[in-house]
Figure 1 (tube, rainbow, N blue to C red):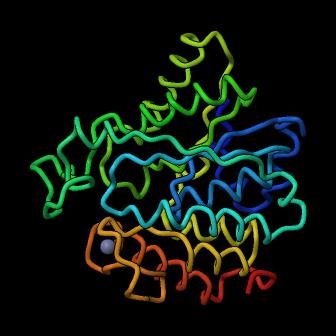
Figure 2: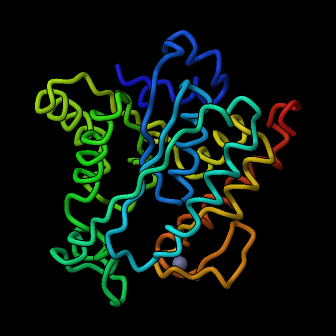
Length: 266
Ligand code: ZN
């Protein structure tokens, strides 16, 4: 069972207790770590639940290359927020996938205005990007003896990308397992969380300190803008990624201020 996709609420409320029963301490994981909010949350989630965690980033000619530069300081800052996370954080891997920018023609890799087609799919969509990412991740994981692959894909608050769908990734898990004759597990702890719930998960994992680390150091803006600071972090404030992040942060702030919030979290 893909526990990250089903008991999201359980994970949200009692992350350690929920996972301890499901995972052996020797489990080793590889996190798709782009430097964005979602992958940063996934790294914290993996550090809480796995004994050894490595990270992987891709340089595919993205316009928001600044996220690649934010990876190292963000990675270290996340690990420092919990004493037992420091020793769990292993190697960082980076793959040059510039060929992806050459064979695709999208606003994520080209200087074009971000628009939406008739089906609501933005022209930032790089076809098959997450399929390629997980396949390369499995290749590295196979060599390094890592059997859990973690990604921040999400169906709840996503941009309409079909390769973020739960069914897509479940099918890929089977394909990778068969194709490499290895039992890989693809974990997507954010699959059924909206952005506000993702911030709540962040808080449950590492408290206000982790929220601040991810708010200030993770990068979401498609245009690579970091000179403009907002309550929710840095970005242009207008692109779809900034808009999604801003709305999620506002909803999270509403939840923080809610009188219904458990007093222990206020
Ligand atoms: Zn932006």
